[in-house]
Length: 214
View (tube, one colour):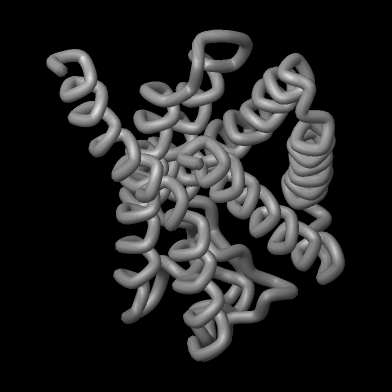
């Protein structure tokens, strides 16, 4: 009786934490895409989502970073409590936790305005906050990319080949687009590919979290 009651008690917060992780991706992209559609001067072919933190309505994206960062961290904690011991059970959640923390840093240190956003803004000038934002984003994105391969290794070992392929494909695609945008030659194709693969990566986080919850 005591053991069964204890297990039930522990399962409730773990599921709640996993639910937080599962909604983080949809919330982030819904909030970002709505802003991208309505904010004057914003162009998906020119601007990453982080630039939405600028301007009079920039507080919306700042809040988006803060909320989704907390949700990702909560989901990572839920994964650490739920995953059976084995390959990736420690570093998988930790890497996702680092990604969540990077979102909090992205909220505190805003991306520099420029390239026509907010409307009327000229070429971007690099500030200290902008440098710290890029550093936090790089650490967070690379942690998420490594996490996809860590979980791919776990899935492969467990015999879940489809999930392993899905995880590796997500990591490879995201890394390629991140390398492209980091090269300084972010044309329209590169920027749209970056948006698409960031969405793919967020979707992977949601899918893996839901899978674990089930």
